[in-house]
Image 1: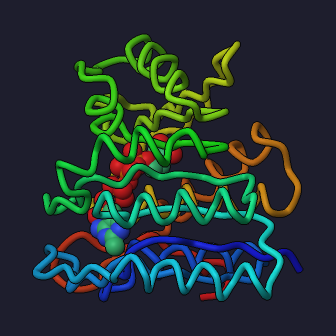
Image 2: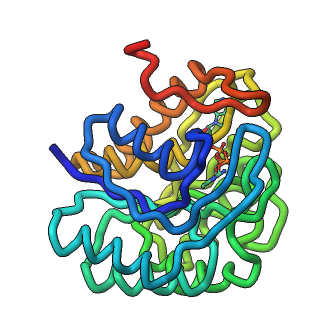
Length: 261
Ligand SMILES: Nc1ncnc2c1ncn2[C@@H]1O[C@H](COP(=O)(O)OP(=O)(O)OP(=O)(O)O)[C@@H](O)[C@H]1O
Ligand SMILES: Cc1ncc(COP(=O)(O)O)c(N)n1
């Protein structure tokens, strides 16, 4: 069995963050491991508290894994501060981690800033150059390139500009585009590849970005190339959204185990 690692924040309600990632890893048959960067007090209605883990403790978790266990794929989610970003970048370099998927988590669906504003430059400078694939949503891509995105052509332009920050592949996700189709644009430095799905009409989309990037990391860990992995991750997230369900009073989570119950 292949091994995948998520470096991300904990979501107490289980829909996003570490919890979503470990569910996706399990559903896809890879052994899941976690490095927790922050604990959030969160439910389907919002985030009520964030406690960062110290950079030393983040480093200690990474060391504990890499000194003992082979890591076939890595996904990075919420990394709130410049100090945490730097320590992760330094450790990934030390352990020569490859196939690193970076989901540039910035603001939760409920509107809470999960990346401190002053840490944005650090993300661009220290972490994105270490990415095999980076997966910004429309809003995150807008922040990274500092311009508005409202159609596929603008997504392509943004993907090209983000590629120059050092990631090998860029996927700008179209979940937030005002369109019947949810198109994700992959740029490989040379060509654009579009991955389309029909938009599913549901309010339960908590953790869609986390689920997609974790599935991508799981398929890369299993040896699929980036194009196959993106196609499979897109299929996985589409079905997980199609089967999403109400938990609590707000935005419910994606479903990872709909085949079983
Ligand atoms: N309503 C929907 N129907 C079908 N696919 C969707 C829908 N919403 C999002 N997706 C797909 O889900 C994946 C995640 O995209 P999205 O843009 O929601 O990421 P995100 O905003 O980073 O998620 P999150 O807000 O959870 O961090 C993409 O493949 C996107 O196309
Ligand atoms: C710990 C953590 N990581 C990521 C997200 C983003 O997910 P969403 O945009 O669906 O709220 C989140 N809410 N919480």
